[in-house]
Image 1 (cartoon, rainbow, N blue to C red):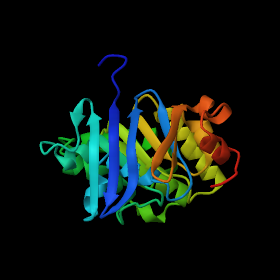
Image 2 (image 1 turned 90 degrees about the horizontal axis):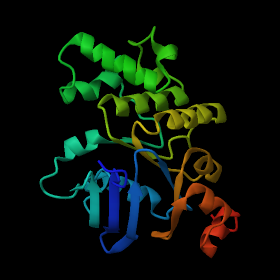
Image 3 (image 1 turned 90 degrees about the vertical axis):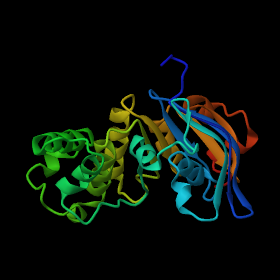
Length: 255
């Protein structure tokens, strides 16, 4: 892969729900070495756009996506693309922690098991341990792997969901407001984790918290009314936005 090759590229992507257009002609790149943040007021299309990146919109009957989304140069909406494989390569962490009602171990082992990533129990155990370590959770749960994942605190549950996403060895991790349901201490842990995961995975995060976007991302995309208003280096977006609407949003005139 050349230096200039993007992990994922969206070109002219629009999303329709029936006759209503939710996202209009968005082009964005997501790279391995940068965290890309999507910001904007509620209902501006940022989560809808995020969901196009692993075809989560396929689950909504009225949804239609146009334009091109490439993963390593391959169109993810082509009929040749295996959606199950795609979702293993492009993992998703949701706003509300959603561990399976299974043990902590089984939460993480589930994906590697169904994708056949471990040939033996010791291999599976190694994947679970590595994933929990990468998600910053191992030290807290290593002595209670058989406890239910749903018995953990909210912040721990969210890190468990990140461990679950990592366990299938994805290339891209999408995070939809991953800390909005968490307290400040748990939020700080998730942000620290995003820093640590950067470079190992391409990461895109939707957040309504501008300070969070400024802290965790290197690139920021500002959405408003389904349109990508401005997209660039995070520092530039926050200090010298080119668009009046971006400036108004960042200075708190609306949102």
